Amino acid sequence: MFSRVTIFNTRNSLYGLYLAKVVWLVYKENNTLLRIEGGDYSMPLKRDTDMVEIDVISKNIEQFNIVRSKNKEKLLAIIKFPNSTQTFMIQNIPTTRPKRKLVSPSELGEERRLNPFTPTQLNLRAME
Image (cartoon, rainbow, N blue to C red):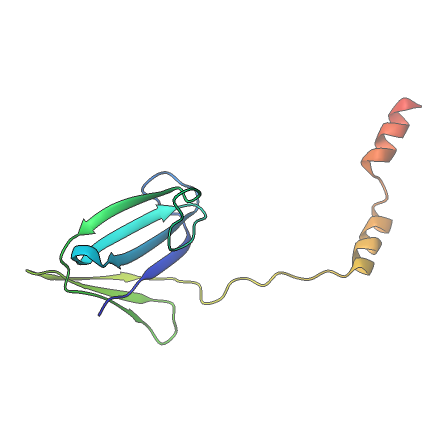
């Protein structure tokens, strides 16, 4: 069984990125486990636009399986090599992205009335 894991906006970058997208996947050729890191890219990679770093972790792996906990805040990765098996856990995964508050145009107008000082008025006052 083979899986793919995508981690968005991680600060655990190997290449000094402030926020990185990291994908762990098994490439079909020789069952090669790859770690792909970059900024904003999509899978499959586009040769002209996607700038990423690709690390070969291991070749000829027999299993790469991901198990998610019931509360979906933890992942357990199981990697079976020809001579050994390794597991690692990823914790504190956000279950939902923060929702943005939608603001109506009338609310924007109220804020403008409360603070009517604008840069245009600043320039006019400076000229007086």
